[in-house]
Image 1 (tube, rainbow, N blue to C red):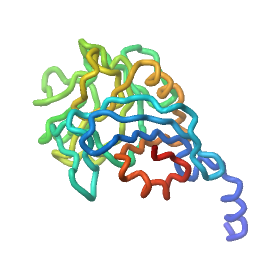
Image 2 (image 1 turned 120 degrees about the vertical axis):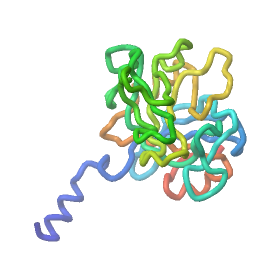
Image 3 (image 1 turned 90 degrees about the horizontal axis):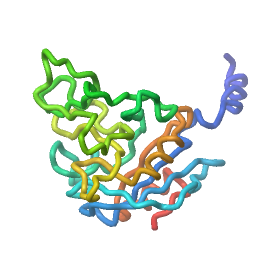
Image 4 (image 1 turned 60 degrees about the vertical axis):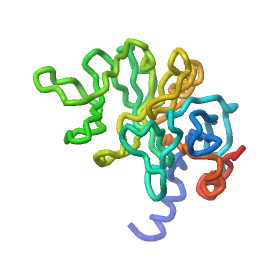
Length: 226
């Protein structure tokens, strides 16, 4: 293909192919806060524009931990939700019918997420092998139903041992207590979020403390820091 034809081809490609068109922003007051505010954005003409009012979310009991580059780093069992930029890869739920257009995990009694740091399948979801179960795993159909509907946040994609596992958006606990490292919210905003996701628009999560927001505004022009 000639350079001219390549240029024309790139000009007329759908804009959704050039990065994320859907962005979820969670801002916390500081790294140790166990709550924050979530806003949904869509990208138009290179600018991210809010399409929802901010809604309250619950974070890890110890606040946030960075995915890389600075302390505090997110680690397994530290009670911190990950801070950084993450792809949104799939959803899950207790209904056999998918709850969004993203890939869907049906959370029956055999769906698990492995959190054993020594397991070769650490930080992956799959079906329980009852004859050879992992040493440590999270059951995705829970008695408290906080995983009735949820979203997989693609944190620690490489499965680096000890850096944290099984990170989701899910429903608040009945007493709204902090999570073990996920981001929780009420059912209405969670369902709106799930139904809004479009895999063609490459949804992402930006989850950070307010103090770091201005540096990310350069990459995600239009996001609000207050």
